[in-house]
Image (cartoon, rainbow, N blue to C red):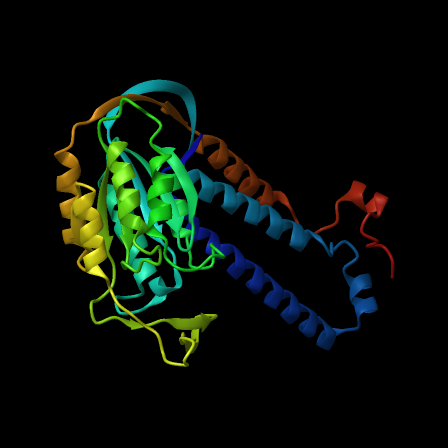
Length: 347
């Protein structure tokens, strides 16, 4: 496993395209200046030992040197020892609504982005709990199985969008049923499901039936409402530009509203709590307090316990390339000149 200490140093790599642009501009200026001075054939006779490719070689060596130095500053580390550690926590599954109604912008920037930010902030507060992620619209899709890898969880979370499921609508019952299959540890005393949604439900009342089954299996259900009660239209965008607003079969603009009633009912039936996600910090604090009150289950997890710095290899390589760059001259190398690999002796 590779770990990077100071990722911000990667921004220094932006120097490289600047160097390339300056080098190209310098070559253009040199050629235009030389043309005003003499013809190409005469210049070649006046400077027979001047190499036509050494300048490009020096640039490549310099870029390699700087790249290695930057990677050295980032300080990559490699995990060298894998240990099995005991942790205590709760199994948590986040079911995130990715239906088209989550594109409504009644809460900035839109409901889906707000939902993803909420879940991400909750993950930041976790220490040793296991988490899983489900995406659902007209059907439910397993996005990430139960894991302790919070980094992977955030990566999968950010990749979620309203186009990932072809079946549209909002089937909360499917999300609850799928979440129940995530909890495969029969000894786990606290199994928690967070449904993050605007509350639209097209399952025809099946959600409550699914909640009852989940309760029998020991799953506790919380709901997080995302959106406003007054609602808003659903923008259809292309390349970030609104093309039109979604309309119904009568040609009327669809206004989607936060349905707190169904979310509250699901939470009450699921022995959980309904949380309004309008204020991110307040919602995260409520969730944190609820999780802290729960009994923790001890489980085993494998993780890298020792990491060794690898920066010295890259710093050494970087210094070598920079040192080498100093000794690469614009003159032709004698033995390379004999080989004439780059056809430099042709007139």
